[in-house]
Image (tube, rainbow, N blue to C red; front, side, top):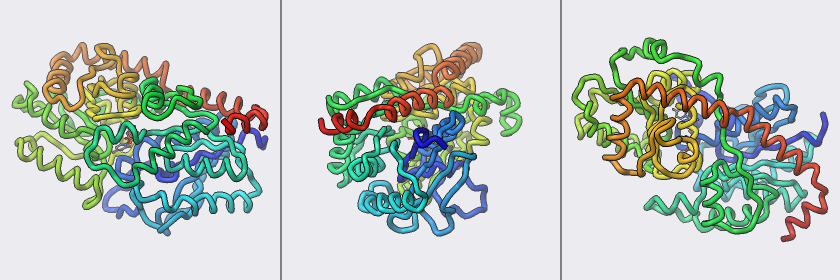
Length: 434
Ligand code: UDP
């Protein structure tokens, strides 16, 4: 194997090998996608890894082992695997409590290299925790670093009340990596702008979006999807998919659906998809949302679908008339492009990456975040006009096909990695000496 085409993707807290939700009654020992410890980052790392492998890269995806039962290495394809390193207790640890275990992660990464006679000249880190790991690898062995934030502390904590103690550490690491990494990957022009205005004016940023599986999403028609899920033809289906987190704005969606003109038509259905664990922060948020649903008398037409596997998700998106992404903030928002790829229009908050993916009045509608009335009227406009719904859906599908497939994203990343690996070491050192 040509060593110049080897890449380590590092995702300390989001395991790329976790791709589906276990079927009940399988006890859930691990985090699942759509729950507190997992979400878009897992999906991003796994899909980028697999698509890069198809382009000839040897891809090793490093994550933290969270239970004794977990395999150390998961082979995804001939040249793509997930490698789990020990760092801290062998159990789920919330991401805000992981920083102290990162030195152990770095040690075990270095041991893995020695044991396998590999030195990773290039690492692509994900989220600020992994960025710290990447910066250590740069100091220790000169590994070049590409970094994707997935979430920026400076933006996130603008919109929430309970600020964790770890924030100052996070902000410092996020600034350092922006200024020192070989390249930062912003997933939308909006994220790029936030990096510049809120983090630092120094550092090299490229914009390469997130992607989605355009074969998987869009593979089933609305009628067939509804038949599979037992949803009637006349139903007006409003869908949410994602984690239970206050920042995701599910409360806004519930209150908006309560104000819908179709509220008492007997046809309205609200489906809320996403996993949660009782007692964890996502379980607490789910209970809170369920309580609001009950208080508003909406339980008859609201379903909590639980954690939806990537296999069943295309069916839910296709069955829906509209998918709502009511986040207070979203650096990219995979759910929006998954719905669009499925031919379903999106009503989203007019923030962050959603302003990039959702084209207002063309592929869906944008509404001010937390504005219940604006969400209610945007949802109703689509529910009341099935022809327009289909037009928006078709335009969304087209937009995703041309801009957001994993294959295209991987080609752009591959070009970036190749360019960095060809860059002479001295030039790289000069950059780091800045
Ligand atoms: N997801 C899933 N099952 C669920 C809920 C969410 O597979 O029950 C996936 C969803 O399809 C998407 C990801 O989790 O790929 C969420 O990514 P997004 O960027 O929308 O939000 P994040 O979790 O990164 O904040």
